[in-house]
Image 1 (tube, rainbow, N blue to C red):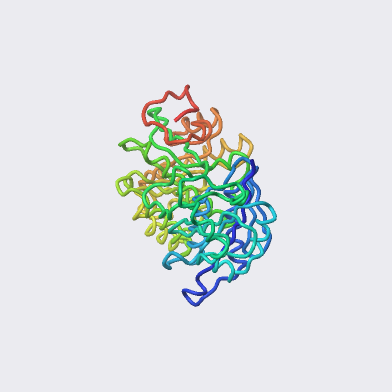
Image 2 (image 1 turned 90 degrees about the vertical axis):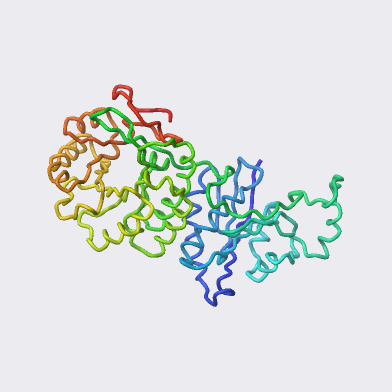
Length: 419
Protein backbone atom coordinates (compact mmCIF):
# COMPACT_ATOMS: atom_id res chain seq x y z
CA UNK A 1 0.00 0.00 0.00
CA UNK A 2 2.13 2.86 -1.31
CA UNK A 3 0.76 6.06 -2.83
CA UNK A 4 3.11 7.58 -5.38
CA UNK A 5 2.48 10.79 -7.26
CA UNK A 6 4.25 13.46 -9.23
CA UNK A 7 3.79 17.01 -8.06
CA UNK A 8 4.28 19.54 -10.86
CA UNK A 9 4.25 23.28 -10.31
CA UNK A 10 2.73 25.33 -13.10
CA UNK A 11 3.29 29.08 -12.75
CA UNK A 12 0.46 31.08 -14.27
CA UNK A 13 1.91 34.47 -13.33
CA UNK A 14 3.95 34.73 -16.55
CA UNK A 15 0.73 34.62 -18.55
CA UNK A 16 -1.60 36.59 -16.27
CA UNK A 17 0.70 39.28 -14.95
CA UNK A 18 3.48 39.47 -17.51
CA UNK A 19 6.11 38.43 -15.00
CA UNK A 20 7.78 35.16 -14.13
CA UNK A 21 9.55 33.72 -11.12
CA UNK A 22 12.86 31.82 -11.48
CA UNK A 23 12.24 28.05 -11.23
CA UNK A 24 15.06 27.73 -8.70
CA UNK A 25 13.22 30.16 -6.40
CA UNK A 26 10.01 28.16 -6.67
CA UNK A 27 11.78 24.85 -6.12
CA UNK A 28 13.50 26.19 -3.02
CA UNK A 29 10.20 27.36 -1.54
CA UNK A 30 8.51 24.02 -2.29
CA UNK A 31 11.48 22.09 -0.92
CA UNK A 32 11.37 23.99 2.38
CA UNK A 33 7.67 23.21 2.73
CA UNK A 34 8.07 19.52 1.89
CA UNK A 35 10.95 19.11 4.34
CA UNK A 36 8.69 20.45 7.05
CA UNK A 37 5.51 18.59 6.11
CA UNK A 38 6.46 15.51 4.09
CA UNK A 39 8.43 13.73 6.77
CA UNK A 40 9.72 10.16 7.20
CA UNK A 41 8.51 7.55 6.44
CA UNK A 42 7.09 9.52 3.53
CA UNK A 43 9.64 10.34 0.85
CA UNK A 44 10.05 12.93 -1.88
CA UNK A 45 12.64 13.98 -4.41
CA UNK A 46 13.22 16.45 -7.24
CA UNK A 47 13.19 14.61 -10.58
CA UNK A 48 12.98 17.55 -13.01
CA UNK A 49 12.63 21.34 -12.88
CA UNK A 50 9.54 22.17 -10.81
CA UNK A 51 8.76 18.44 -10.48
CA UNK A 52 8.72 16.38 -7.27
CA UNK A 53 7.93 12.70 -6.86
CA UNK A 54 6.09 12.02 -3.59
CA UNK A 55 5.65 8.62 -1.97
CA UNK A 56 3.67 7.58 1.10
CA UNK A 57 4.04 3.94 2.16
CA UNK A 58 1.09 4.19 4.54
CA UNK A 59 -1.54 5.52 2.14
CA UNK A 60 -3.37 4.38 -0.96
CA UNK A 61 -3.81 7.92 -2.29
CA UNK A 62 -2.41 11.35 -1.51
CA UNK A 63 -4.53 13.98 0.19
CA UNK A 64 -5.16 16.81 -2.33
CA UNK A 65 -6.02 19.23 0.48
CA UNK A 66 -2.51 18.83 1.86
CA UNK A 67 -1.22 19.78 -1.59
CA UNK A 68 -3.56 22.76 -1.59
CA UNK A 69 -1.79 23.98 1.54
CA UNK A 70 1.44 23.95 -0.49
CA UNK A 71 -0.25 26.00 -3.24
CA UNK A 72 -1.21 28.60 -0.66
CA UNK A 73 2.31 28.66 0.84
CA UNK A 74 3.95 29.16 -2.55
CA UNK A 75 1.50 31.78 -3.69
CA UNK A 76 1.87 33.73 -0.48
CA UNK A 77 5.66 33.73 -0.53
CA UNK A 78 6.12 34.27 -4.29
CA UNK A 79 3.31 36.69 -5.06
CA UNK A 80 2.50 38.65 -1.91
CA UNK A 81 -0.39 41.06 -2.32
CA UNK A 82 -1.57 39.69 -5.67
CA UNK A 83 -4.90 38.09 -6.35
CA UNK A 84 -5.00 34.32 -5.89
CA UNK A 85 -4.47 32.01 -8.86
CA UNK A 86 -0.82 32.82 -9.55
CA UNK A 87 0.36 29.31 -8.69
CA UNK A 88 -1.20 26.08 -9.87
CA UNK A 89 -0.08 22.63 -8.72
CA UNK A 90 -0.83 19.45 -10.62
CA UNK A 91 -0.68 15.98 -9.10
CA UNK A 92 -0.54 12.78 -11.10
CA UNK A 93 -1.12 9.36 -9.55
CA UNK A 94 -0.33 6.22 -11.53
CA UNK A 95 2.28 3.50 -11.80
CA UNK A 96 5.93 4.40 -11.36
CA UNK A 97 6.74 4.70 -15.07
CA UNK A 98 3.70 6.88 -15.71
CA UNK A 99 4.65 9.11 -12.79
CA UNK A 100 8.16 9.64 -14.15
CA UNK A 101 6.78 10.33 -17.64
CA UNK A 102 4.45 12.96 -16.21
CA UNK A 103 7.44 14.54 -14.46
CA UNK A 104 9.04 15.25 -17.85
CA UNK A 105 6.14 17.27 -19.29
CA UNK A 106 6.82 20.85 -20.34
CA UNK A 107 5.02 23.84 -18.87
CA UNK A 108 3.03 24.12 -22.13
CA UNK A 109 1.90 20.48 -21.85
CA UNK A 110 0.88 21.09 -18.24
CA UNK A 111 -1.15 24.11 -19.35
CA UNK A 112 -2.91 21.84 -21.88
CA UNK A 113 -3.71 19.35 -19.15
CA UNK A 114 -5.07 22.13 -16.97
CA UNK A 115 -7.34 23.20 -19.85
CA UNK A 116 -8.72 19.66 -20.15
CA UNK A 117 -6.88 18.68 -23.33
CA UNK A 118 -5.09 15.71 -21.71
CA UNK A 119 -1.71 14.39 -22.88
CA UNK A 120 -0.49 11.48 -24.94
CA UNK A 121 1.28 9.59 -22.16
CA UNK A 122 0.22 6.81 -19.82
CA UNK A 123 -3.14 7.31 -18.08
CA UNK A 124 -3.43 8.30 -14.45
CA UNK A 125 -5.41 10.37 -12.00
CA UNK A 126 -4.66 14.06 -12.55
CA UNK A 127 -5.77 16.90 -10.29
CA UNK A 128 -5.38 20.65 -10.70
CA UNK A 129 -4.87 22.34 -7.36
CA UNK A 130 -4.84 26.08 -6.64
CA UNK A 131 -5.41 28.17 -3.54
CA UNK A 132 -9.06 28.39 -4.59
CA UNK A 133 -10.03 24.93 -5.82
CA UNK A 134 -9.25 21.26 -6.31
CA UNK A 135 -10.54 19.62 -9.49
CA UNK A 136 -9.75 16.53 -11.51
CA UNK A 137 -8.94 16.75 -15.22
CA UNK A 138 -8.70 13.96 -17.83
CA UNK A 139 -5.25 12.54 -18.39
CA UNK A 140 -6.05 11.38 -21.95
CA UNK A 141 -6.80 13.64 -24.95
CA UNK A 142 -10.55 14.16 -25.62
CA UNK A 143 -10.70 11.67 -28.50
CA UNK A 144 -9.19 8.98 -26.24
CA UNK A 145 -11.27 9.84 -23.22
CA UNK A 146 -14.62 10.06 -25.09
CA UNK A 147 -15.41 6.31 -25.21
CA UNK A 148 -15.18 6.20 -21.39
CA UNK A 149 -17.63 9.05 -20.90
CA UNK A 150 -20.79 6.96 -21.15
CA UNK A 151 -19.88 4.23 -18.66
CA UNK A 152 -18.65 6.82 -16.18
CA UNK A 153 -22.04 8.56 -16.23
CA UNK A 154 -24.10 5.42 -15.58
CA UNK A 155 -24.52 3.27 -12.51
CA UNK A 156 -23.29 0.13 -14.27
CA UNK A 157 -19.86 -1.09 -13.16
CA UNK A 158 -16.95 -0.29 -15.43
CA UNK A 159 -15.34 -3.29 -17.04
CA UNK A 160 -11.81 -3.87 -15.74
CA UNK A 161 -10.23 -3.65 -19.19
CA UNK A 162 -11.76 -0.20 -19.72
CA UNK A 163 -10.18 1.19 -16.56
CA UNK A 164 -6.46 2.00 -16.23
CA UNK A 165 -5.03 0.00 -13.33
CA UNK A 166 -3.96 2.90 -11.10
CA UNK A 167 -6.63 5.39 -12.11
CA UNK A 168 -9.41 6.56 -9.85
CA UNK A 169 -12.96 5.99 -11.11
CA UNK A 170 -14.51 9.42 -10.94
CA UNK A 171 -13.54 13.06 -10.63
CA UNK A 172 -14.63 14.84 -7.48
CA UNK A 173 -16.47 18.16 -7.87
CA UNK A 174 -14.62 21.45 -7.48
CA UNK A 175 -14.08 22.12 -3.78
CA UNK A 176 -13.52 25.74 -2.73
CA UNK A 177 -10.97 26.27 -0.01
CA UNK A 178 -12.50 26.55 3.44
CA UNK A 179 -12.41 30.11 4.74
CA UNK A 180 -13.35 29.59 8.37
CA UNK A 181 -11.93 26.26 9.54
CA UNK A 182 -9.32 23.72 8.49
CA UNK A 183 -10.40 20.55 6.71
CA UNK A 184 -11.12 17.42 8.70
CA UNK A 185 -9.09 15.49 6.12
CA UNK A 186 -5.90 17.46 6.72
CA UNK A 187 -2.61 15.76 7.52
CA UNK A 188 -1.90 14.83 11.16
CA UNK A 189 -0.94 17.86 13.20
CA UNK A 190 2.75 18.47 13.76
CA UNK A 191 2.04 20.79 16.67
CA UNK A 192 0.56 20.65 20.16
CA UNK A 193 -0.16 22.84 23.19
CA UNK A 194 1.72 23.33 26.43
CA UNK A 195 -0.04 24.71 29.50
CA UNK A 196 0.92 28.12 30.87
CA UNK A 197 1.06 27.75 34.64
CA UNK A 198 0.63 30.45 37.27
CA UNK A 199 2.82 29.42 40.21
CA UNK A 200 1.31 31.62 42.96
CA UNK A 201 -2.20 30.17 42.45
CA UNK A 202 -1.07 26.76 41.12
CA UNK A 203 -3.43 26.99 38.17
CA UNK A 204 -3.44 26.73 34.37
CA UNK A 205 -4.13 30.16 32.89
CA UNK A 206 -3.49 29.60 29.18
CA UNK A 207 -1.54 27.66 26.58
CA UNK A 208 1.24 28.17 24.05
CA UNK A 209 1.54 26.32 20.74
CA UNK A 210 4.60 24.10 20.33
CA UNK A 211 6.10 22.02 17.53
CA UNK A 212 6.62 18.28 17.90
CA UNK A 213 9.83 18.50 15.85
CA UNK A 214 11.41 20.46 18.73
CA UNK A 215 11.26 17.35 20.90
CA UNK A 216 14.01 15.73 18.84
CA UNK A 217 15.90 18.53 17.05
CA UNK A 218 16.80 22.21 17.48
CA UNK A 219 14.58 24.84 15.92
CA UNK A 220 15.66 25.66 12.32
CA UNK A 221 17.51 28.91 11.70
CA UNK A 222 16.71 29.84 8.09
CA UNK A 223 13.96 32.46 7.69
CA UNK A 224 12.20 30.43 4.98
CA UNK A 225 12.01 27.34 7.17
CA UNK A 226 10.83 29.39 10.13
CA UNK A 227 8.11 31.01 8.03
CA UNK A 228 6.84 27.62 6.84
CA UNK A 229 6.90 26.41 10.43
CA UNK A 230 5.00 29.45 11.72
CA UNK A 231 2.35 29.17 9.00
CA UNK A 232 1.88 25.51 9.85
CA UNK A 233 1.40 26.50 13.48
CA UNK A 234 -1.16 29.17 12.61
CA UNK A 235 -3.02 26.65 10.48
CA UNK A 236 -2.89 23.84 13.06
CA UNK A 237 -3.97 26.19 15.85
CA UNK A 238 -7.44 26.39 14.30
CA UNK A 239 -8.01 22.74 15.22
CA UNK A 240 -7.71 23.73 18.88
CA UNK A 241 -10.07 26.70 18.74
CA UNK A 242 -13.36 24.73 18.69
CA UNK A 243 -12.27 22.91 21.86
CA UNK A 244 -11.71 26.13 23.80
CA UNK A 245 -14.57 27.08 26.08
CA UNK A 246 -15.42 30.67 26.88
CA UNK A 247 -12.96 32.03 29.38
CA UNK A 248 -10.05 34.32 30.07
CA UNK A 249 -7.13 32.03 29.29
CA UNK A 250 -4.72 33.31 26.64
CA UNK A 251 -3.61 31.22 23.66
CA UNK A 252 -0.11 32.16 22.50
CA UNK A 253 1.13 31.44 18.97
CA UNK A 254 4.88 31.62 18.12
CA UNK A 255 6.03 33.92 15.31
CA UNK A 256 9.55 34.71 14.10
CA UNK A 257 10.92 38.18 14.96
CA UNK A 258 12.73 38.57 11.65
CA UNK A 259 9.90 37.29 9.49
CA UNK A 260 7.60 39.79 11.17
CA UNK A 261 9.80 42.57 9.78
CA UNK A 262 9.54 41.66 6.07
CA UNK A 263 6.50 42.60 3.91
CA UNK A 264 6.29 39.24 2.10
CA UNK A 265 6.28 37.26 5.35
CA UNK A 266 3.82 39.68 6.93
CA UNK A 267 1.46 39.07 4.01
CA UNK A 268 1.77 35.32 4.55
CA UNK A 269 0.93 35.71 8.24
CA UNK A 270 -1.95 38.04 7.41
CA UNK A 271 -3.61 35.52 5.12
CA UNK A 272 -3.53 32.86 7.81
CA UNK A 273 -4.77 35.21 10.52
CA UNK A 274 -7.64 36.46 8.35
CA UNK A 275 -9.32 33.07 8.86
CA UNK A 276 -9.42 33.34 12.62
CA UNK A 277 -12.74 33.95 14.39
CA UNK A 278 -13.01 37.57 15.49
CA UNK A 279 -14.52 36.69 18.86
CA UNK A 280 -11.33 34.83 19.81
CA UNK A 281 -9.04 37.84 19.30
CA UNK A 282 -9.30 39.05 22.93
CA UNK A 283 -7.67 35.78 24.03
CA UNK A 284 -4.94 35.48 21.41
CA UNK A 285 -1.30 36.26 22.11
CA UNK A 286 1.74 36.32 19.83
CA UNK A 287 5.03 35.15 21.30
CA UNK A 288 7.77 36.68 19.15
CA UNK A 289 10.73 34.30 19.33
CA UNK A 290 14.35 35.03 18.39
CA UNK A 291 13.96 38.60 19.66
CA UNK A 292 17.54 39.99 19.66
CA UNK A 293 19.13 41.36 22.82
CA UNK A 294 19.05 44.95 21.56
CA UNK A 295 16.22 45.10 19.00
CA UNK A 296 15.73 48.19 16.87
CA UNK A 297 12.97 50.39 18.25
CA UNK A 298 11.71 50.92 14.71
CA UNK A 299 11.40 47.18 14.13
CA UNK A 300 9.64 46.66 17.45
CA UNK A 301 7.13 49.38 16.64
CA UNK A 302 6.58 47.86 13.19
CA UNK A 303 5.96 44.42 14.72
CA UNK A 304 3.61 45.85 17.33
CA UNK A 305 1.60 47.75 14.71
CA UNK A 306 1.26 44.60 12.59
CA UNK A 307 0.24 42.30 15.45
CA UNK A 308 -2.15 44.62 17.25
CA UNK A 309 -5.03 43.97 14.87
CA UNK A 310 -4.99 40.20 15.45
CA UNK A 311 -3.60 39.70 18.97
CA UNK A 312 -4.58 41.04 22.37
CA UNK A 313 -1.17 40.18 23.87
CA UNK A 314 2.36 40.55 22.53
CA UNK A 315 5.13 38.56 24.21
CA UNK A 316 8.79 39.06 23.36
CA UNK A 317 10.63 35.76 23.72
CA UNK A 318 14.28 36.34 24.64
CA UNK A 319 17.27 34.10 25.41
CA UNK A 320 19.44 36.57 27.35
CA UNK A 321 18.36 36.99 31.00
CA UNK A 322 20.12 40.39 30.97
CA UNK A 323 17.75 41.71 28.31
CA UNK A 324 17.76 45.55 28.61
CA UNK A 325 14.05 45.97 29.34
CA UNK A 326 14.75 49.39 30.86
CA UNK A 327 15.37 50.80 27.36
CA UNK A 328 11.95 49.76 26.03
CA UNK A 329 8.72 51.75 26.16
CA UNK A 330 6.19 50.04 28.43
CA UNK A 331 3.59 49.67 25.67
CA UNK A 332 5.77 47.64 23.26
CA UNK A 333 4.90 44.28 24.82
CA UNK A 334 2.57 42.91 27.46
CA UNK A 335 5.14 40.33 28.59
CA UNK A 336 8.72 39.22 28.10
CA UNK A 337 9.55 35.54 28.36
CA UNK A 338 12.97 34.00 28.93
CA UNK A 339 13.47 30.92 26.75
CA UNK A 340 15.97 28.71 28.56
CA UNK A 341 18.89 27.59 26.43
CA UNK A 342 20.00 24.00 26.01
CA UNK A 343 22.68 24.28 28.70
CA UNK A 344 23.66 22.33 31.82
CA UNK A 345 21.08 22.43 34.59
CA UNK A 346 23.19 24.69 36.79
CA UNK A 347 23.49 27.32 34.05
CA UNK A 348 19.76 27.24 33.42
CA UNK A 349 19.01 27.80 37.11
CA UNK A 350 21.48 30.72 37.14
CA UNK A 351 19.69 32.23 34.13
CA UNK A 352 16.36 31.98 35.96
CA UNK A 353 17.80 33.75 39.01
CA UNK A 354 19.40 36.50 36.89
CA UNK A 355 16.18 37.08 34.95
CA UNK A 356 14.20 37.26 38.20
CA UNK A 357 16.65 39.72 39.77
CA UNK A 358 15.26 42.46 37.52
CA UNK A 359 11.64 42.08 38.58
CA UNK A 360 11.41 45.63 39.88
CA UNK A 361 12.30 47.01 36.44
CA UNK A 362 9.73 44.81 34.73
CA UNK A 363 7.04 45.81 37.23
CA UNK A 364 7.84 49.49 36.69
CA UNK A 365 7.29 48.97 32.96
CA UNK A 366 4.04 47.10 33.56
CA UNK A 367 5.46 44.06 31.73
CA UNK A 368 4.90 40.50 32.96
CA UNK A 369 7.78 38.01 33.12
CA UNK A 370 7.59 34.38 32.10
CA UNK A 371 9.93 31.43 31.62
CA UNK A 372 9.66 29.09 28.62
CA UNK A 373 11.22 25.64 28.37
CA UNK A 374 11.17 24.69 32.08
CA UNK A 375 12.06 21.00 31.94
CA UNK A 376 12.49 19.78 35.52
CA UNK A 377 10.97 20.07 38.98
CA UNK A 378 14.20 21.75 40.11
CA UNK A 379 13.79 24.53 37.52
CA UNK A 380 10.13 24.87 38.42
CA UNK A 381 11.04 25.35 42.06
CA UNK A 382 13.78 27.83 41.07
CA UNK A 383 11.16 29.95 39.31
CA UNK A 384 8.86 29.77 42.33
CA UNK A 385 11.65 30.69 44.77
CA UNK A 386 12.73 33.61 42.60
CA UNK A 387 9.19 35.03 42.49
CA UNK A 388 8.51 34.39 38.79
CA UNK A 389 4.80 33.77 38.29
CA UNK A 390 4.33 32.37 34.76
CA UNK A 391 6.07 29.23 33.49
CA UNK A 392 5.67 26.68 30.74
CA UNK A 393 7.62 23.72 29.43
CA UNK A 394 7.92 19.95 29.78
CA UNK A 395 7.86 20.21 33.59
CA UNK A 396 4.42 21.82 33.37
CA UNK A 397 2.77 19.74 30.67
CA UNK A 398 3.40 17.38 27.82
CA UNK A 399 2.73 18.61 24.29
CA UNK A 400 -1.05 18.20 24.29
CA UNK A 401 -3.37 17.68 21.33
CA UNK A 402 -5.60 20.57 22.37
CA UNK A 403 -5.40 23.52 24.78
CA UNK A 404 -5.69 22.33 28.40
CA UNK A 405 -8.63 23.17 30.63
CA UNK A 406 -8.15 26.27 32.74
CA UNK A 407 -8.20 26.18 36.52
CA UNK A 408 -6.47 24.85 39.61
CA UNK A 409 -3.89 22.07 39.20
CA UNK A 410 -1.71 21.25 42.20
CA UNK A 411 1.99 21.62 41.47
CA UNK A 412 2.69 18.13 42.77
CA UNK A 413 0.43 16.75 39.99
CA UNK A 414 2.55 18.26 37.21
CA UNK A 415 3.33 17.67 34.43
CA UNK A 416 -0.13 17.49 32.84
CA UNK A 417 -0.45 14.59 30.43
CA UNK A 418 -3.92 15.01 28.94
CA UNK A 419 -5.83 18.01 27.66
